[in-house]
Image 1: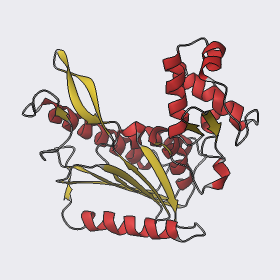
Image 2: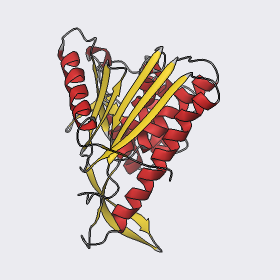
Image 3: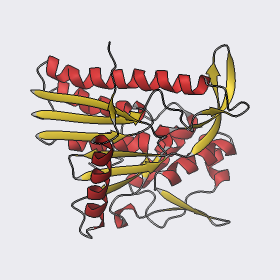
Image 4: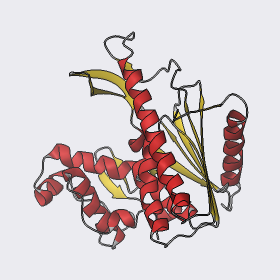
Length: 292
């Protein structure tokens, strides 16, 4: 199964720009558009999908971020040859699930994660965990290590645009962090309680740092790495919406590195990333207590 096979099968999403991106992926995946072909103009896509130009532009940006197309100023958008790269970069919300799904096909599964929260990871785990419960995947053991920012750390992000002293964005993040950590621990731990997996360990620790990137290490052989980009957005804080500087993990672009890559560079990155994670885990990281 290709990394995007699930994204181009099934029913199209309800959100207009995602539906357009889905249909264009279908065109590419089924050979109606081949590598090097130029996509229809934005005006043609507006007519085809009966949407605004802004919606079409957002769909094209989605495809660019996932590595399906490239755009050249004044010359339109062209389909990329995705077979030329070991693994094209992709949005975290799209590709992480299939990498984890593949990792869960091993007998002994290990998953190390460093991120701002566990929101993207929880989303990516849903389908593999369902497959374990259905008996489609049968690992003997699962070991998850989750490394998060400390709930009491004065992080650089998120913060209010208007008032840096406003601690509500950080308090909101702390609630989200704890909630997502509890969800992950409960969902993975339930596999042992139900008898689906004999040996399950979920260990969560924190460090006093602001994550500016996210890292996932799978079975010691694969690494997915992506930078958090800072965005300005409005979020509900109390009875009103407040503009904050924040990062969106689901939209982060992930780069995949494999220790089995022929050029050796993937192995070097995976091993270096594992050493970096282990160095934090075994020194300054502190256990996070979720239940008193």
